[in-house]
Length: 441
Image 1: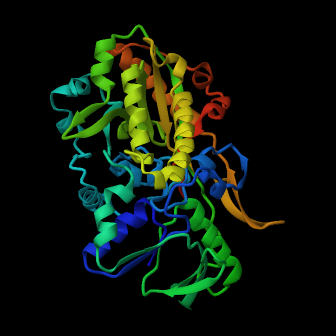
Image 2: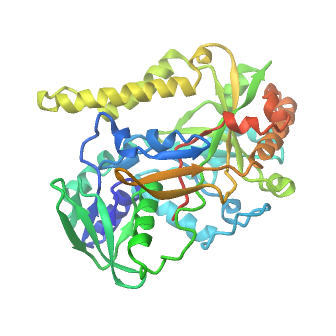
Image 3: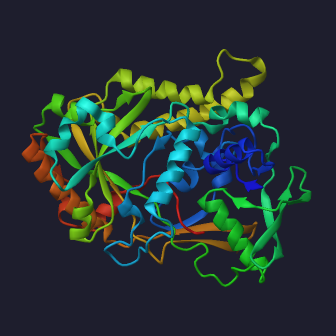
């Protein structure tokens, strides 16, 4: 039994059902996208504002794959090692194990890209590699042509024997057959009735917030659950921090476009990032940082991206029976378009400016946590998103190295945000979350 029909839940269910196992997927949300999907995500929050808490999740069949862009990236060995700064332990799996599992996942998704050898994928376009020196390495993101897993695996979900999906059935409780061993889940139907569903294996795949909610609730109700005294449940919530580190001036537009414009290989869209090298990370004792270049965007590119979003939400040609669903989808699409334009700074999208985007690994912070509190309407989820603060030094260090590299390579002159250059903590106020909720479980 798999709790949650999102990216992990659907992919795992299909993988197991293809291996002739009987799999039941229990999804708390409905089959179809709702007009105001945010209503299911409402929660209280304090500390740094986290937009993805409401905007970046969708409790529906397909989960957040109904929202995301379908970006795929590989973990580096450095990601799994204990960091050179306090607070980040090593992973309990090796990079080789994770790489093998990742390749299996890529094969399942039909993504033939070799994410570990970006220069092979770039081919003749890898000329930039000789210009960036030892401080950075090129990294690729591959984008799924069909990021909605309900469509990507439509035939499997409809036809695989032994695969059953139950929607609109939120899991309200766990039942233990022995301490630490879940033997059944209690789900609530649309009529409010509760039903017990048992299975020899239960996997929680409902996403960071909902898994934390369920585990916290279980701690309260079941002192013999095996993790009732585990203080880490709900703790160490993290997300990636994204921001503009500065602007790029006096650049060669053709050279910058050749180095950083999205490109297609084997029918897959790829984007190029510069990631701080392992030697730089170790030398400076900082968390991971990656850089992206945002240059002027053509109207054609904008319309292409918006059409791609629309194709995922709107059925064409229209079916009169699907009109209510299409109207709800239109509301969702309008919200997507507005946030997309705002985040990409629409005022600069069609001119010759270029911006340096920065993506920062959050340092684990004990103040950052998910809690379950009692309120007048029952239990409510509360997110306290806290930052360690050392992320600003990491971002400044990498931006300064990038300024030297860009000048030496003839890529342009980077003007770093004054707050970042001064290592002012206020720069972190300008950072936003990446809708990549992690931790708590």
